[in-house]
Structures are given as C-alpha cells and as structure tokens.
Length: 240
Ligand code: URA
Image 1: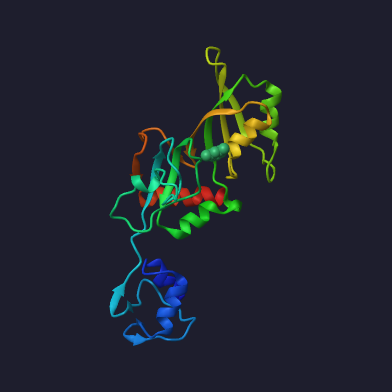
Image 2: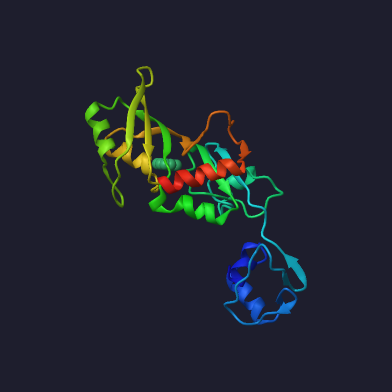
C-alpha cells in the first residue's frame, strides 16, 4: 500500500495532507525518514511513524444497522437533522454507512470502516441483492407488476429486471404491499419505480441485504458482523 494512503487510512489525515507530511520529513518507515513520494509499505510488517508517533490501521469492523425513519444517511448534516452517526458506537473510528436510504425509508444498512468492503458493495458491477417491502397507494394490477419486473423508465434510464410480488392489500387504507428485490442502488429507485407504474410509495422498508435479514434488529439497533459473516457478504457481492 502506498505510504500516503496508509497514513490516511490510519485516520491521521487526508491523503493530500499525508503527502505534505512526507515531503516535510515528518514520516519514517522502520526508523528511516522518507521524503520521496511513491514509497510502498506493508501494513502488517512495516513500522510507520508520523511526527515520532507509531500509526496503525484501525481494526476493521462492520455492522448491520436498522435505520429508523426520519434519520439522514450522512455523518453530519448542515441543516442539523438527526443523522445515522448518532447511533454508531463512539469507540470505533472511521465508521461510514454503505450506500444510502432516504430519510423517510427505514431498514437494513451496512455500516463499516473497511474501505475495501464498502467499495466492493458500492460497485455497480457487484450489485448485491436488496429486498424492500413497499406500502403503495392502490392495488397494482398484474400488468403493473409485470412492468416493474421487466424494468421501467426512471431518471437515469431503464431499471434492470427485478423480482416483484404483490404480498398484501388493505382495503381500509386503500394501499397494498409489494416485495421488491433489486440489484441496483439508484437514488430513490424503489419510489421512482412504483411511481412510474402509478402506485406511489407511502412507506418503504429495506428488509434484506444479500444474506442478511432485518428480522431481530430493533429500530436504531446495530449488530457487529463476525469475520465469517463479512466473508459471506463479500461472496454475495462478488456473485451479484
Ligand atoms: N429506494 C428508494 O426509493 N429509497 C430508498 O431509500 C431505497 C431504495
């Protein structure tokens, strides 16, 4: 791994500022000051010091998180709205949500400080399955369901084939429940899809990401993933 990237991943500073620190002669590798760019280090065996203090990569931690409704998926919000960061454990550095859920969407998210895992899960080529339960207005006819399955035109192009089923209707509220399984993660995708077939979303919940279900996690709760579970997630992403 390149030295400036390593320093940034240790949480010391940004990559650009890490380059400045190197240039200024403030970084040593195995006791030798390094001032040129492009040096690589082995995070396992090389001893890196910044301004005389040893630095190390943070422990990689990944969590399942049940995002409540009304919370924004950012670490800080300029408008002062409650964010997901308010739910994160205070003693784990560098945690970020992978992807996003709309403020009014609730349900399952992955939260991690493992940059590689986040990149793998976010890559459009590796679309891991995401399952949603959408309460929509009206009762979609089979034609509308078929259109959702085949793909509909929304902002940014046609959606990829999806698995869509009508799983309930409530004559009292005039709404229905749809279960949708998609691989993509486009902005407002499920809301736009349902809107495109004339059945706007009233309430949206993500109930599954790859091998993990929301069941058992209460609203606002986080659960740490084991090494084995992280591997299962990686595998699902590669297959997706
Ligand atoms: N689709 C949406 O429309 N919103 C979400 O939050 C997630 C998927």
